[in-house]
Image 1 (cartoon, rainbow, N blue to C red):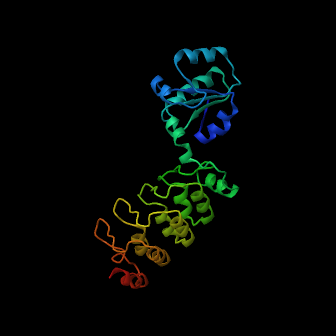
Image 2: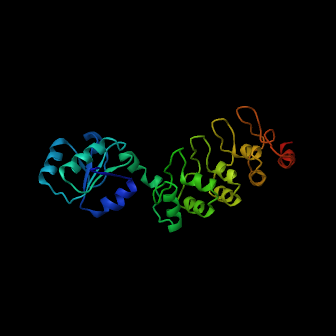
Image 3: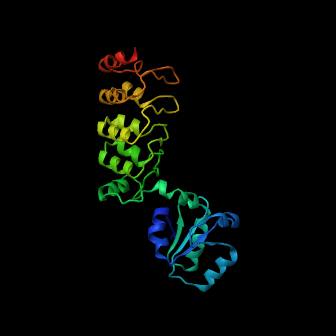
Length: 254
């Protein structure tokens, strides 16, 4: 039996904080609390915790947060075991709370986009959060050629510079799916067409090596650097996997 639930900062805002009646407890040290905290939160020192449990207002929701969402789970469980019915620990703690406007979209997405997010393992309104592999919604949407989702994410301020655990970003993902619409949307949003991974490999180099002619053509015609080389000293021309790509790139490499 679990005595508490873990919720994201977005869920905490929507389900608990806006209610106005919840007990919001800051489990960080007194100095950190004094420096900044969630509006309405109380610093959870031992005397206060003992007092609140003694009062026994068991129907009142309890939200606990700490630095990164670890120790808050223990305190939330204490309240749950004491009989409080609605106990929550905030995932990511105050660190995630401060970044919530970057991690979650403030304007509502379409129902279709939120359904897609949840299906893929994200929360509703996710913007720059990640799933295993450090994959953001934007990277995954580009990888799957979900141009309508990409459009909504970019309109909400999705970060085009984020990279997955392999060091590859949304531009690379759009080349993988060879989605010209996703590539166009990324370019219009100001994405760096020469962004490279840790090996110095750019999306153009990848597209050339993976026989993605349409992606190669788009990138080159929109200003991607054909002369750039990877850390292994290979250019997009060197990595060209097809005669079509080789012939296309040669005039640009003179």
